[in-house]
Image (cartoon, rainbow, N blue to C red; front, side):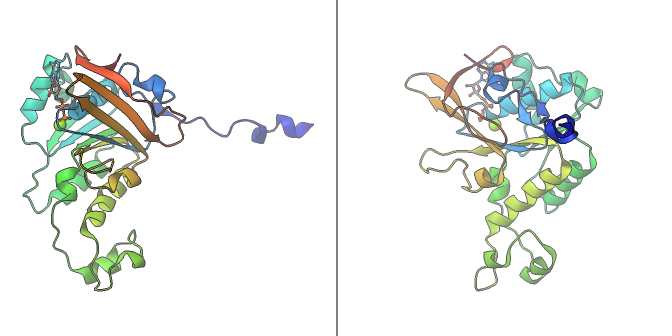
Length: 253
Ligand SMILES: Nc1ncnc2c1ncn2[C@@H]1O[C@H](COP(=O)(O)OP(=O)(O)O)[C@@H](O)[C@H]1O
Ligand SMILES: [Mg+2]
């Protein structure tokens, strides 16, 4: 039976994964984030989104990955102070060029160009965008005629009868497509409000991302949780796991 010994009888490939750097989380998602995917990290303010993203990149630095942290928060120093307090000192890696923290100014017209250039030209293995919410809510001013001719990822039926394009959709498609093109393994955060049933503030990112992880707070019980809602090519539980923030950052408990 020569067929049984042929290449086709062997598994075609094993999916490469990136360790999250969060103690206990890799075990929940079959070893880590599938390489080349985009995962949405959604949760209310203070739930640990920024800390989780920093841990992911800190792990990347340890593994020799090229890392990029794109932030819409102009207080980059504040992020670094918080991570240093938690035992993650990024300063040596910044100085050695292993990681770049880049502030994106929402008030600058060329914000998308700056972001896309950095993502596509940097050769990054791991990218964090913290957060997508202000970008998805930013107005855009482009001629619709040009858009119809030049943007191929919007299907004709997505144009409304008056020729306009749902603006949020355009923003999100652009960001996600840029990250996908880069082939890095990315985390994108979204502010989550309790009032809607959505998994992101914009209600769309969860559909465009390959994975969705929710961070939640229960202030009356003084508890924090993490839930993996979606992860491409991965068997995972939907059960919320208790987490704590302490030395080293977030850990499953
Ligand atoms: N050194 C620390 N020890 C324990 N908890 C901390 C520490 N630093 C920050 N935190 C907790 O983490 C929260 C901030 O996490 P962060 O990732 O910035 O939240 P998000 O990005 O979701 O708004 C703080 O509100 C606090 O509850
Ligand atoms: Mg944050």
